Structure formats: C-alpha cells, structure tokens
Length: 334
Image 1 (cartoon, rainbow, N blue to C red):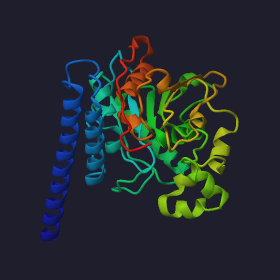
Image 2: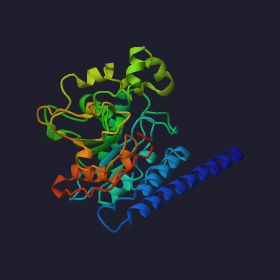
Image 3: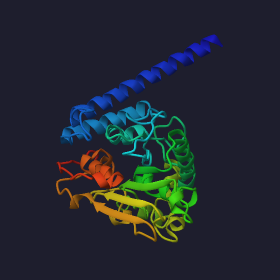
Image 4: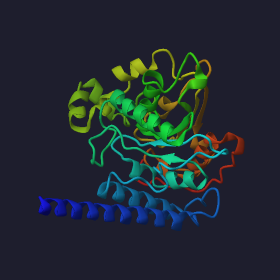
C-alpha cells in the first residue's frame, strides 16, 4: 500500500511539474509576444510569429496536461470589483480544452481586472479532447459550473465568452433549457452577456464535409468515433431544431457574435449570426469588416488580439477602445 501511494504521489508531482512547465511556457510566450504582462489594461497585439508560438505552446500544454487551467483563471478566492462586477466564464470549443483554447484570452482578461473561470466540460475527465459529448449534457455541466462560480464569488450574474461550440449551442442550450435565464423575470438571469467567437449557432457543415456525411446518413457513424457533438452541430440536427424553435435569444441577455470569413468549420459563416428576439440585444461582427488584414480562421480566432479587443469591448461597452488592427495570419490553415 505504501509503495502504491508513493508511486501515485510521484506521478502526481510529475504531472504538476508538466503543468507548471506548460503554463510557464505559454505565459512566457504570451508575454514575449504581447509586451509586459502587467503593465497595462490590455497587452500589445502580437507579431504574427508570436501568435503562432502562442497557439503552439497552448496546444502542447493542453495535450501534456489537459486538466491544467490557463493562466489567470480559476482563482476561487477572486471577488469581482465594482468596475467588473460579473465573473467571466470561458467555454472552450469541441475537442479542445480550457488550457489550449484560452491561454491568451484568460490572462488578457485577468489583467483587466476580471475574475476569470475556465472549466473543461463535455468530455471524459483527464482527456485532452473535451466538448465531444451531447450538447444538452454539456449544457448541464455548464449550469452546475456557473452556479459554483456565483456561489464562490458572491456575484449575481456572470458573462460567458465562448469559442465555437462553447460560444454557440452549449451556452444557448444552457440559457434556454438549463436555468441560465428566467424569461418571466430577466433581472434574475444568471447570465448577462454571451460573447461568442465563431459559434456554429445554426449548425456548420465543415466546408461541406458535414453536408456529405448528413446526406449519406453517416453522422451517427462519425459521432461514434469523434463524439455526439459532431452530429448535434450539423445543419438541421434534432438538437439545432429544438434549440432554434421559438427564436435565437433569451430576454435580458446581450449577445455578441464575432466571426471570420475564413472559417472552415462553422460554415457557411453566416450560420453563426443571431437574430434578436424580445428583450435581447444582438451584435453580429465579421472581423474583416473592422480589420481587413485579419486572416484568422476558426481555431486561431481565440488567439487573435483584434478579436480579443472586441471581446473586451463587448464585456465592458462603456469603456470600449478602438481596435488597433494588426496583421493576423491563419495559424492552422483555413
């Protein structure tokens, strides 16, 4: 028994060291690319090479230690400030995890004074590939996590920032079906703002691949390999039909959708847009209409500081700053 406990302890220490190394690598690359970590409200936008290094470090860290939180997140002693009274919950995309999705945006928001929280959800514990299971089950996990954040921080509401699935069907399902909002009294909503990066709000066809698998009846077979989230996010899926029935939005929630024309997953990109229903506000943004030299695609949009400034502006519109457009290259292809 003692030998087994010593072996487990050594294994835990090795995993902890890997987490520290990965977190340090990502943070050092972020600081090196963006400027001094704590010297201003928002970092200097990176050079294109810096963005490539950031994404590479985050992907490596997410594989080596998928349960490590991104820098700046999951401080359960954090108390929201008067300037930023709502904690921010970051929801990663399909087959990603919190570390590899949010290693740029999490410290960015933390430096601005937000309490930041970033769960893994929708996948087997310890797997680097999260958000692969059914969307409704993922939304129930998010509901429990938001309740935990509210209890720990004493806040009345949170804001959600999500990428891909984490900005579209999962939080929208939570808002509608899992207690995220109170349609009879929107002032009692648990969520004030949903800011989404490349969300497949009305299904995506993955540059036509999804259309082919759907027409051939192969979605169940693909989902058996990669997870039910694949089928759930296809155009016309049962999940999408139920989610879209009765409108896109919930009263009292402010929605911001930030997308790129070069998306190869959430396609066609116009499927990401939302239409405001009663009591809701929606702003749909194509990033190339603001920054023509932005060539981000689906995955790298979470490491795009042009987009990050738009996220900051959406969370705190009273103190919005102009986007200082910089060249952003696609990191992982179109």
